Image 1 (tube, helix red, strand yellow):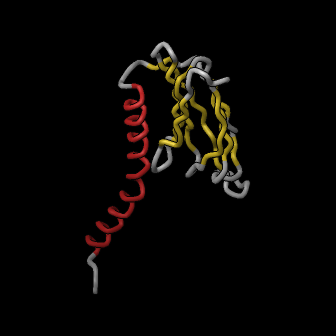
Image 2 (tube, one colour):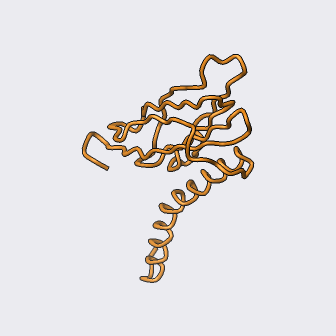
Length: 139
């Protein structure tokens, strides 16, 4: 089977588009998940603490912890992952503390976002960029 120059260029452009498309779709998917969690309400930039490393040598196990005084639930997102929703932590009235720790998998360098729903119905947001290096060589 022989391809013309025009067909080869079309196939190459299609392959390039298919590699870029998931990254743009995941960013839009992260905003959709946030809007679903908040119901479209305004989100403040204070009231939640997010701890994550600036540089992670291995994207398979990145330690993350979140805490928000008076939170009823906390949503954790990795905006660059194909499925951005990582975890939702729910806290009942008898919870001793509104904090959680976990290890997450990151597909590459990206933002980790935490949204907290507070007891008064308001929302708080924190985000941190985590640079994932493969084998310590940069990325």
